[in-house]
Length: 121
Image 1: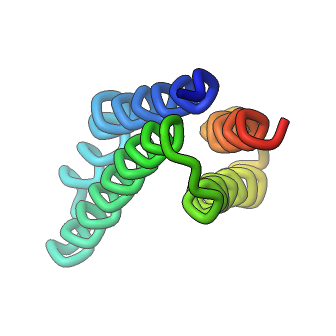
Image 2: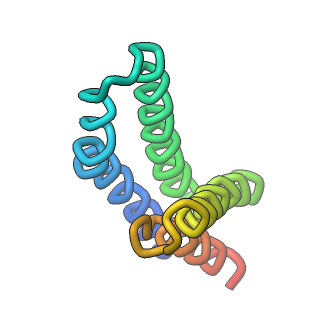
Image 3: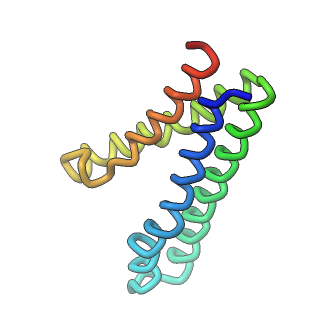
């Protein structure tokens, strides 16, 4: 078993929990209570829960990789996370003018770095 990949999996599981239990009330509750149309609220829910599914699948994938080497799976999980990091960086700078308000990019760069180090480092 790769201890570093299992740590990466646990960090992703923690990220999933933070997304659900802290992010949900902070982000989704105001959206649900807003005057946005029902279809817009429904799409927001689908997107939010879709991200939840992705986070959980990445945690499971990293746990699997701790035991079973699969370079394609590793690179796909890392690519998705780097993509998420890029979005947080681009929108943080572009819409908020800083990276402080949306620091999620840190974990979405840190976990792939740890994962790649575990396999190739």
